Amino acid sequence: MREPYLEVTFRHGRPIAAYYYLPRATDQKSARTRRVEPGLVIDFTADGQAIGIEITTPAKASLAALNAVLQELGQAPASEADLAPVLAA
Image 1 (cartoon, rainbow, N blue to C red):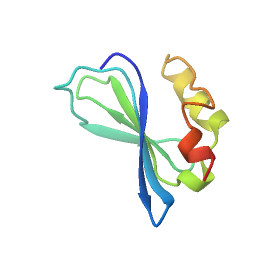
Image 2: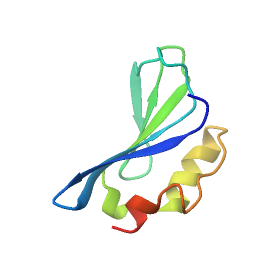
Image 3: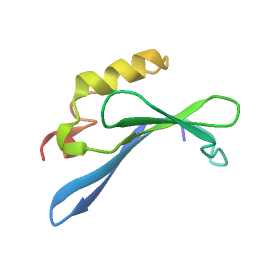
């Protein structure tokens, strides 16, 4: 996967969880996690590459918080359109 993308899980029409996938090889798996902003958890491979960001409380998610984490990881910022399903809820 070369481009980041968002996957959202809904229950009764409301988002209950979301995952922002970062560019990675298809065989890369999470080996450890690190909690950052409230409601955000970064997944890392065994060699330390960030492969995704769990958004555990989508109702409280903010574009600014996600972009701060992405900047820390050296990734391109997300846009409002990227997070539209979560921000609209």
